[in-house]
Image 1 (tube, helix red, strand yellow):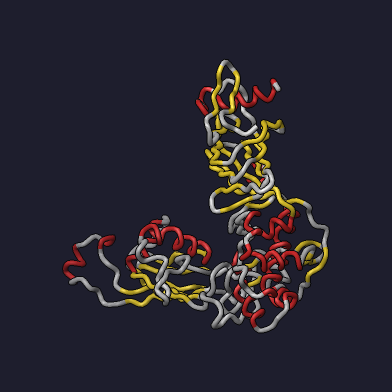
Image 2 (cartoon, rainbow, N blue to C red):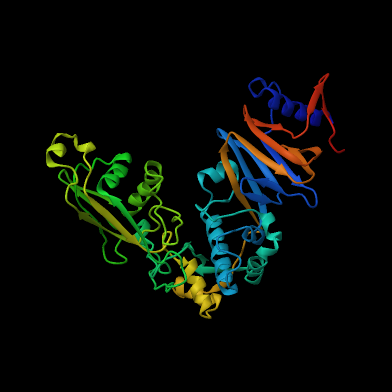
Length: 440
């Protein structure tokens, strides 16, 4: 009891004045839900348990779940898609997480004690609680139907890359990230015509706009534009380059770097222009959607009188002409195309046929799978706001602090530990922590 009061007192000191904590704060605070309680953080909803971890310069938030329960919290494709496409996605996603665990944790994973992140950098995870939504039932059924199945190559989990849409053909892995390639990550046709909304897209930029975006990324390409094109080697031969030519010479950069520059700096400099408008009036999700595009420079006559143009600094003179970028698909295009899987399912293909098509004949097989996955929901944060829908147990460094009420709880990094701000008043009187109006 004395130890529990000491921990609670440290938590209270931390919430009141984090810079003047005199008692040690816990490095780990665990939130264990009572029946019916869920936790809401960011855009996700979780059944927990959740761990708030103090490490490095910030806080991490981690949820522990059985493997298939983790999978049911993914939102990689709409749950309304055909069952065979969902089953193919379930196997690909299960394989990816098992491959990730076998590879070993990232630096962030080691620091905050998690196996896989919750973003599109790993797999898009919206939380274990969303599996209870009736709309998710088809996806939950697909996970259960394929339980225990992954794709195996040469005795190990395959690296099952997948992306939203390939357009008409997937890409060999070495053409996107270099390296020697993989026998099951080769290019295959992906007939998504009339199915994918990313079948074709076009971006048109004036020469001046194009140059300013590249300049913002630190590329001194010079003035004026004379050429802009993609230098793409034969399929399977490696990474393509974007080539930009001016009077100052040629600048070469990889397609991946070019895409990252346009996606980052384009919307910052020209938010009304990028991402570009879709034919239906909306906007594309990114300025440059994929690695599968071609580019051309179409010069035009100067719009300024030559005398005025001659006295303006080069940086102020508009560059007549248009850079036109035409591409297909959304994402890296390696491995399974999710919209391609839907198209195959619409045509009557089974999930094993879909997987075999996109992964060079690999078939689902049983494998020694992990029991629990630790999912990194956040890392390096100064504070975390977590809303509990009901009561839960709180533990600090493994010591139970009792049952806590519903409400918005804030966790802050203070010193080397975690300070907790509860949703109701917590008072310290005579060195004793008093829980006011908290359930016993």
